[in-house]
Image 1 (cartoon, rainbow, N blue to C red):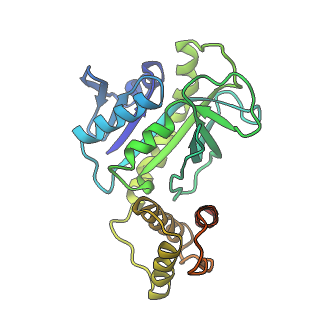
Image 2 (image 1 turned 90 degrees about the vertical axis):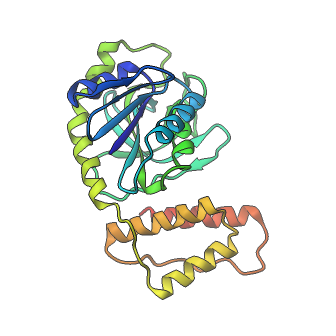
Amino acid sequence: MIYFTMALLAEAKPLIKDLKLTLQQQTPFAIYANEDVMLIISGMGPDQALMATTHLLTKYPASPRDIIVNFGIAGAIKDYKIGEIITAHTIKNRQNRKFYPDMRLSHPFKEVVLTSLDSVQTQESADIQAVDMEAYGVCQAALNFVKSSQIAVFKVISDHFSAAIPTKEQVYDWIQPHIEILMALLDNAQTKLPDKLSYSDTLQAKIEKNIMTLKLTQTQANQLHDRIKGYILRHGKEPMMPKPLPEMTQHKKEQKDAFNKLINILSS
C-alpha cells in the first residue's frame, strides 16, 4: 500500500482521477483509496498534517512494505523551475529540527533541503532552498508508525516565494505529468524494502559503539539502522563507518555534529 498525505483537494485531484480513487470517508479528513493506494487530505499547516497522518495510520495501519508519501506543491528558489518535481533529503522546521528520509533508490529528481513553516514564505532567505507547510508534520507523525526508510517527500515547484495563489487548473497541470513516473518509482521502492537485513559482526560492533558514545535516542538509533540498510541496498556493500567519538565525550553539540556527519555519509 502507498499512503499519500496531501494538503489540498486541488493537489490531490490528478491522483484521484488517474488512479481511480474513490471517497472512503469525508470527516474528520477526506480519504480516497483503491486497492493499492490511500490518500488523505490534511488541510494546510504542520499541525493539520500531523493530525491527518496520525489519523490515517491509526485507522489503516501500515505494514513493513508500505510507503508513506507527502506530495504536493512547494515554493523554492529560482534554481528550480515552476512545475519541476523535487524530493527532499532533509526536512526541517522553523526550530531547525531535522528529519532525514532514507533515500534508497536511484531517481531522476533533484534533492533539496525542504523547510516546513507555519505560514507562506514570500521572501528569499539565505538558509532556505524550498519551503512548504506540511512535510515536517507528516514525517513527525509517520515516524511513530513506520521506519524512516518507508517515508518519502516529493514536491512540485509552484512559485519562487510568491504570495500569489495558483489556480486549481495550474495546480492540476503541474502535478499530473509527474504521476506516472512517481508511481513507478514508489512501486519499485516497495519491492526493495527488506523485512530484515543482517550486518557483519564488525559493522554491528561499530553501530553499537556509535549508539553508546553518541548517546542516541531510540528514534535516532532506528534512523541510523535505516540509513545503513539503505546504503547497503544502494551500493551492495557495507559502509566504512567513521571512528566513534572517545568514550569521555560529553558535549551535546559535538555528539549532534558527529551524528549528522554520520547520517550524511550514509546518505551518499
